Amino acid sequence: MPVFDVLNIKGEKVSTVDLVDSIFDVPVKSSVLHDVVTMQLANRRAGTAAVKHRSDVMGSGRKLFKQKGTGRARRGDIKSPLLRGGGSIFGPNPRSYSYKVPKKVRKLALKMALSSKCQENQLVVLDQFGLEEVKTKKFVEVLNGLNLKKALIVIDAENPNLELSSRNVPSVKVLRCEGLNVYDVLNCNTLVLLEPSIEGIERRLA
Image (cartoon, rainbow, N blue to C red):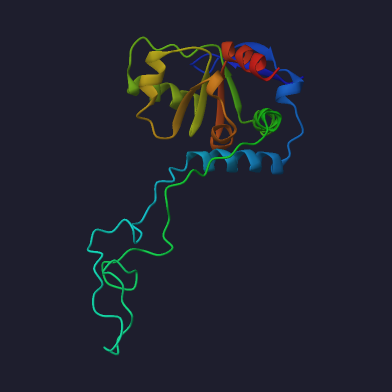
């Protein structure tokens, strides 16, 4: 059972916490993580790319010139893809790129992502992250004091001061435990868990 020190925002040790083996000490398989991250990125794609096909182009449907006798190609209307200003032939249409991976696989991948942070010593546990007001400067000072760069901070409940203070810091993301996902865990250099959020994670992944 992994044991981690619980720090305060000044970086001082306050206590220790035992993390559950079934969540924070799982064998990591890169293929499972790859499948879930690929799914997440595909689901984020807008899929709004589109072109105008022959039926979408504005223009007359009149035949340009007679069918026979001119020696030219047998033109239809001015919206032909072969003419300037005509419709596109094989361009993209709006579509959804989203698909689903089984729920058990998604849950297992999240356990593996958390376990990988434990095994690589990229996990920090804080007792709390209380800010008296919405102030980005104070938030950055705390991060610098803890030597955190490109961090994901997981909280247990709504914390407006912390969430609003962090949103202008490009390398830091604050998530509630119900929004925790594989991509964001793997994409950060340091995973920061507030001690109350651990119970929420264990309840979600039990």
